[in-house]
Image 1 (cartoon, rainbow, N blue to C red):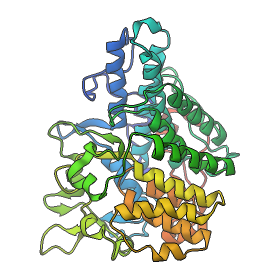
Image 2 (image 1 turned 180 degrees about the vertical axis):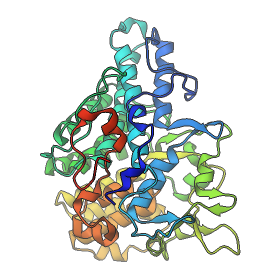
Image 3 (image 1 turned 60 degrees about the vertical axis):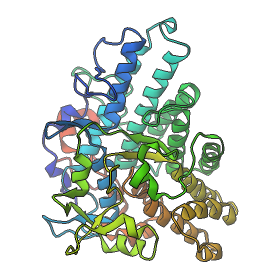
Image 4 (image 1 turned 90 degrees about the vertical axis):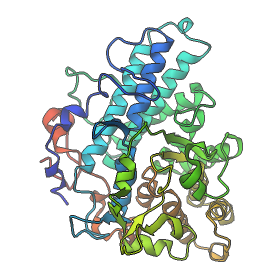
Length: 468
């Protein structure tokens, strides 16, 4: 496991500190996020679209402009959690490794910094422009949207590369709050407390100044609140749990979102048109990148592990989340996305807010019935009608684990939520799910080796890993 980053010796070092390509095939238009290109509201909107293009992990897939969110955000966390494995090309099982060995750490690292730098490019150029150049409050909104995206990038680093569970730890993120060029790459990593501080400051501005509503491929105030709930439950102070309950309750009760009557419909028929989708990824024309992630030449790229199949046994979702691709097949493919909406992705859904509320309620020491209510609502929308087991639970740890299992079954292959929640448990629980982790050092990933080559001032590698 300590040798995983030997694979990561390519061009990432410099790329991870750069923004997206100069010419961005943005959503919905082309954009440029570096240099002096924002001169008015129109050019600002185009540049902001470039930030969202980075968020969607836009790029080239075999000559076709495509959003490539699916691999790092969906496949890697499920693989880390032990619920899928490669179908061919290896002898890996559900407990084979702590992290993917195919450059996944590199991909997550570079994705995060491309997004952060694109956001910083917009923020830097927007600040000196007069408010009178923009309609209404649009200048403040654009800056707030960019800061929400910067917060997401740093949050992504926080949960994968830092000792997020210890606010006194020096092993925080390499924070970037200025646009990076070739002259200011050198910088040391910061501590965990300051990592939380910057993320939460950016999200507070999002809550204050972002649009109240927006098309669900863009951020808004509700998205900032949802991300804040994610960050706070990761930090896990007593007061954090109380605020998570407040934030999620506000989104559930007052936000413009509605749970889908049948959760299956989101993935099979409705996609981004569903009112449950808070933030999603709109595919570009003619892309097939996610289709090929799950199905390639009618063969599963990844298969469900026995642990995942057992988790879904006798659950209504088993029928459509797992399946044989042909009558003669013996490999259970991930079929959650199979259908006409397969290229659409989901970063945040309202379901997650219910489950975060349930988890925070348990962790805050409140009445277990108050946690069971949102949990049963979500289970009901998945087709479950018998809540006898949930109603009988009187132990907090047991209920937390049921919330975790529902999180896996409902939010698997979306934005790494299953992995993030697993890591909020004590080590003895983590090891029951993923014995190969072995010790706490390995619940986070190593900083890619190329980062130390291009930025030798970054500081120490994460404990348990080598720099090379």
